[in-house]
Image (cartoon, rainbow, N blue to C red; front, side):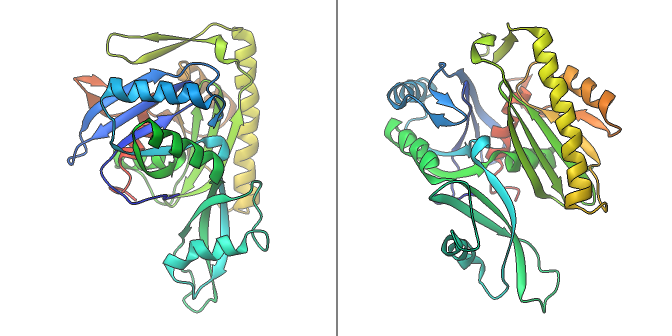
Length: 330
C-alpha cells in the first residue's frame, strides 16, 4: 500500500524515533543481512524529522557502515500518521483509476485531518455484481512528512521505491509464519514499543481497525545496550510503578476498542478471536499477563520464527521482516 514508485528486490527499513532496523532477503526469502542501530535522541518525533541536518549525517554514516549505499529501499510510514477508512466509490471505476477518483474527492466527499495526503485504496471484492457501488480500504498519510523522509534517504544515498503500512507488514509476516490462521477469525495485534502502542484488527485477512497511542514515557528513561551481534537490548531506567500504571491504562483502552469493534463496527456479529502481542518493549511477558488477567480472550506472544547466523531474530524486527515479504505475500 502507499506505493510511491516501482517495485523491486530492495532492502527494507523500519525507522522509529529511537532505532533504525534493516532486513535484506535473497530471492529465496532467506535473510541475507540484519542490522539495527540506535538513533540519537532529538532527531525524530513520531516519525517527523526534527533535525534534518543531523539525521542526514546519521543516515549517511549508517549507510556507509552497513554498505548499502545506492540500494533500492522500502520503508514503513510512521504509525502516528497513517489513517485507515472504509470508503465507497462507483462500481464502474477501473482499478487503476480508483486512487485518482479519491484525490478528486478530497475536500468534497473525502475529508482528512491533513493537507496534501498520499493515499492508496485497496478495492474489496464485490458483494453484489449488480450494485452500483463498491467498497475499498483507503490508507492515507501526510505527503509532506513522507516526502521529507524519502528525500532525505535519497540525499543520503538510497533509492526509495515504496512506502508500506506497518500493520500490513506485521500481518504479512504473521500470515507467513502461522499455517493455522483461519479466515473467519479476527486477530487483534497489540504492538507495544518503547514510546507507543499500536492496535490493529484484521479479519478475513483484511485490516479493519488501526489505532496509534503515544505512551507518556520519556526517551531518556530508556537505556540501550548493544550485544556482541549488534542487537539492541532496551533497559527501562524510569519509575517502574508509573510504567505499570501506564500499561494498566492501556488495558482499559484495549477493552474499550474491542467492545467498539464488536458492537459498533460489527453490530454484535463478530468479536476479536485472539490477541497477538509484539513490539520492542522489553517486558512483553508482563504485558501478556496483564491482558490475560483483564480480558477473556486467548493471548499469544508473537515471536519471530526466523533465524540469522544460527540465532533467533529478535521480535523487534518483525515489522521489517513483514516489509521484506511485500510483493511475495499480498
